[in-house]
Length: 79
Image (cartoon, rainbow, N blue to C red):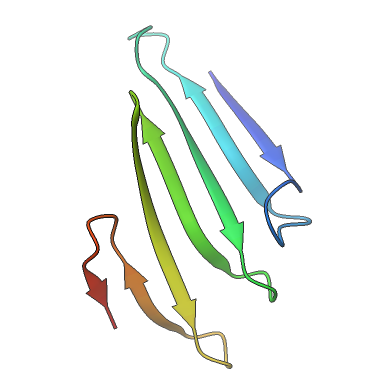
């Protein structure tokens, strides 16, 4: 089962804010994914929590909306 929430993320009016999920095949497996957006509506971060473990990835962009970098949850940065 999945539940979707919209319009509640930072700078996220009109965008997906959060997904919560529970797997019926494995009742103990639960999680959620949430997003934040920058002032132009681009994804700034994605946070995923699964079975109590939380990881966040970060995104940056140039003025033409091209992605400049992606930072993995472990801190590795790709430009």
